[in-house]
Picture 1 (cartoon, rainbow, N blue to C red):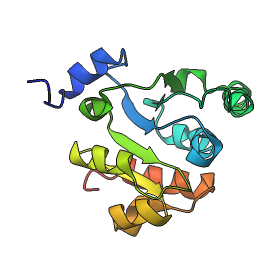
Picture 2: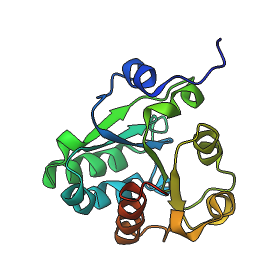
Picture 3: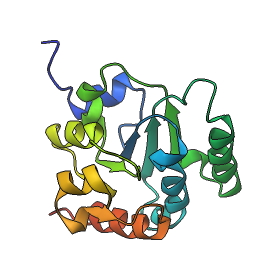
Length: 168
């Protein structure tokens, strides 16, 4: 069935991702307002608690834009020695079928009017944490899954709480 959601193993195989890691997905165009920088900053503290974690950024940069932003992301990854914890994948046309690859989805954007990524991940049964801003906060409707926008410390605290709490 072309509309079915892939199993975790199948989705990971299709995306060429490791099967033995706690995979965190961040889906969206590479853009400063999408908050990928804060996720990368938060990895340093989260990885202390979980060496078996890997963050996958899925999305393209805006055409003819965001070169400096992508360079800034790569600079922090190199400076903090996070290469083994991070992957970048291009935009996937069938992303809604592939959310199953992830154990957690982070929606770090701070200017999101309607959270398509949030809805797609939730529909796939994947836990989602997001910035406490308009669309995302309304959709998640539970402060345990929200963190302060543009705040990597708040993000890392929420991330650790959800990642280390099987009930959540």
